[in-house]
Length: 169
Image (cartoon, rainbow, N blue to C red; front, side, top):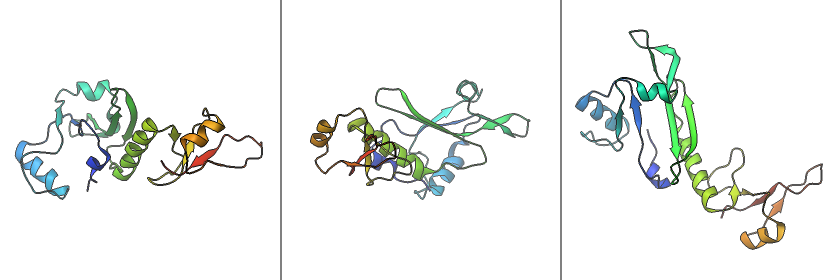
């Protein structure tokens, strides 16, 4: 099941690329039903028709370990996330045999939006609502003004004070 990615305000929609497009109506009905939606002809995302595999080859989207009935590599499960500036912010390539982790994709989208708007970074295993890291380039006095909920420094053996956290703004 796909999560509600619209909650993360993802402009542009979701794009799928297949070397052979989904069968017209039956495949679309199946996709909507699998996603828990009412079976209908339209999908909540566009499909890129890449019959000749040009785009899949250009973007390195083929899984050499998995082959179709003709012995040709099939497309991997690829996720590309672009920012409003139209620059690639993230790419994840899952093997063709592995499904995408939509919880992780949503976590990354939320992190990208947060870190683009605020002067913070998200640490390992961060989840929406957890504390975030204050960028080390922000001077201490400025950090106090930017983050009125407080800035907390992780004590390190080196004595350096670069690991600073604040509640998620």
